[in-house]
Image (cartoon, rainbow, N blue to C red; front, side):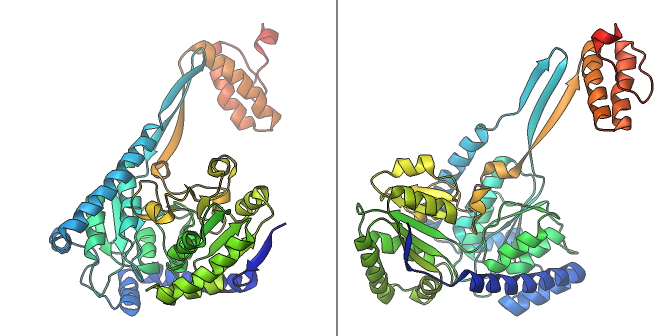
Length: 441
């Protein structure tokens, strides 16, 4: 049975925090919907101290921003985008349109059609998330989305050069310098100067994630990608330095980033707690990471690997780093998570920045019912049907007629009956079920 050696805030306190966020987001979205550009400008000036003549960057502004990025950084961005593009293209190739003849004269098929417009949010408050531009903009581009709007908040009163470069190189058609609720609200609801999109994607803080949740239905969303979560599943094959480093590496994201260790080794658990204390003395981002670890950190001692698997699937964390003597066993048996990082040679930061898989992943247990952002999220699978012979129209129509009458749908049944009459040459009384062919004969 799992035993907690260290736990974060009680669930009730976390729920109270969520409720406060919900109220703020609801009122802010209402402000944007009624106030349009004026409301967006007021919010941007209040929260970011930024109110330009236009939030949409012109081609010359994009070029000027990109000129500020060093050659080394540009090369690194290109390398990361090459990895992400290659994997996204392989994923896209796995999705094929189909057309089959299920019975003589009955043709069924589906087509994978890109969403027609997407708003990609790229966080940039505490840390400028350059990689999020690759993950959303570039992946949408591979999917063939014809209108890609990308938005990120200003950093030090101006568009962040590397973020702008990554957006532009990834294939964004419109780039906005706008952050927070005002950015996702403007892209989803539209304003006088910003045409609304059909779908919102990208990670963000608790306010951005909640805004996406409230806007869902008016627009599509990729998933609920809130404050980052990381879990390390480890046995005594790994040491405390690596475990502690991997936990704090994600805890530095924000003040409310959960980080959990599941282990079968009490010695590793206790050593990791001590190592975290040591690293927090030297980590430059300790101000954030320490609060996150204090309030949202967990260390759970489990009886065995089956116990760790059960707890991990129940917690359904976003990032799950597995460092054990049976990593592939976890790959085969884990079913609820955002992404797996198998073995000590890889880590969550690889996935966040460069390796090629997408870093926009489900949080708050959403991994129980969805995976992360990928090229398929930008594609809608639409079915179609075609009946090519009179015989098939009459046969399927007769079955349809009877099944509609079984449910009491007379109007539905008549849609079928009119085909039976015209293409089957049979006299079916109005508002009745078509008899089976053998009985009719």
